[in-house]
Image 1 (tube, rainbow, N blue to C red):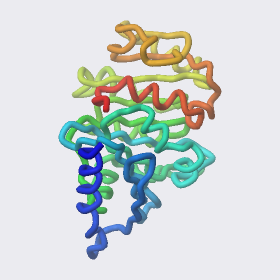
Image 2 (cartoon, rainbow, N blue to C red; image 1 turned 60 degrees about the vertical axis):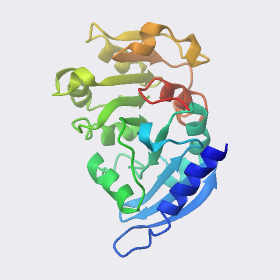
Image 3 (cartoon, helix red, strand yellow; image 1 turned 45 degrees about the vertical axis):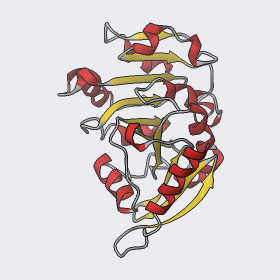
Image 4 (cartoon, helix red, strand yellow; image 1 turned 120 degrees about the vertical axis):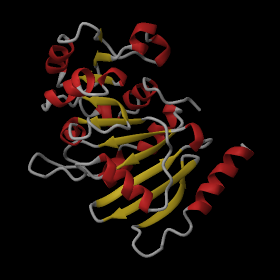
Length: 257
């Protein structure tokens, strides 16, 4: 407990000078045992959270992109994202940027590099470990533009395979670093398209139902390069239900706290 508090204190001190000229403004508060920053960037708010016990030396980064009919502030609050992140017990810095709230809006962060740079400009030091991109619903439009980023190790589509399938095929199968990548598909409204996508790859593993806990997953499912899980939860519940998101975050190369 003392060590965890010391880490959080150091993080707070490290960001105390964020008001320097040219840096985006940000607020800070304790939340769910960790620290929450809200960065006010030129492209809208970015929420950043680190869990209690966070160790930057061995941590990775999780970028969670919300779906349609909400925005970053509303998703952060209504979906209780900090609580869900904490329940995953992953040693990561969690980032929730703004994203399109509907199909008529353009992608806000077309470059993962630019998003990471904006967080760094707010005087928040990102870890050097793997980056995981998680997207719900319409977030596929944002994530499909990130698949060639060299830092991206895994993409998780929470009922989000509505299109841009060629981009995700490149990520998992044909791109320069495809051999190192993992893709996790959760299907509810997108069950048919997700299943059809998985059938293209002989190494894909399919599960008919989301487990009640990580321990119920088989070793093969946990190791799978491409895993498709048919969800018994409805589309919205995958984002705000408090069960699916903590579970899928366990299926990443991140270290457990």
